[in-house]
Length: 199
Image (cartoon, rainbow, N blue to C red):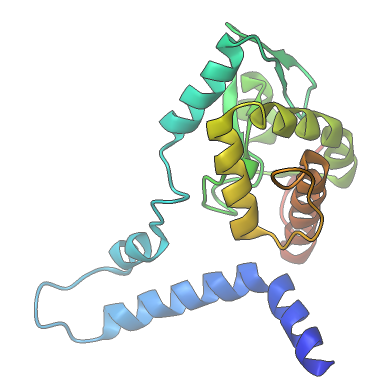
C-alpha cells in the first residue's frame, strides 16, 4: 500500500523531480574538473534534454498541420474558437509555454489565433474558466490529428511518454482522454507554481 502511494506521489511530482535532477546534474557536471575543454551547464542541459524521438523541429509539426489543412480538415483555436482552414494564418501554440515546459510534444502544440497567441496568451497559462471552455476545441484538434497517420503516431507516442493513461479506444488513447490529461496537467502546474494566467 505504501509503495503504491509513494509511486503515485512520484508520478504526480515527476515534472519537478525530472527538472530538479536535470538541474542538479548540470551543476554537478559543470563543477567537476574536466581534463579537456570545460563545458557550461547550458551545453550540458541541451545534451540532457535532447530527445530526437520527441524533439522534432517545429517545421515538422507545421508541415503536418499544413497537410491536414490542404486535405480539407479544419482546426480550431482553443482560446478564441476561431476556425483554422487552408489559407488561414495561425501560430503553433505551446499550451504549456516554453518558459514553463520546454518541450515540443504533439499534445502541447495546437494551432491558435496568432493575434490572441502573441498579444493575450503570450507565455501564460489559461485560467480555469478559459481552460474549461477550450476543452471542446482541444478535443476537436486532437481528433483531427488522429486523421493523419503521421500526426496520430506522434501524438500517441508523446501521450504515452508523458501521461499514464488507463483508458484507450481503438488503436490508441482517445482524444477526450488526452484532453483530460492535458487539462489536469495545466491546472496542476498553474496551481502549484502560481503562474500568471490569462482569461
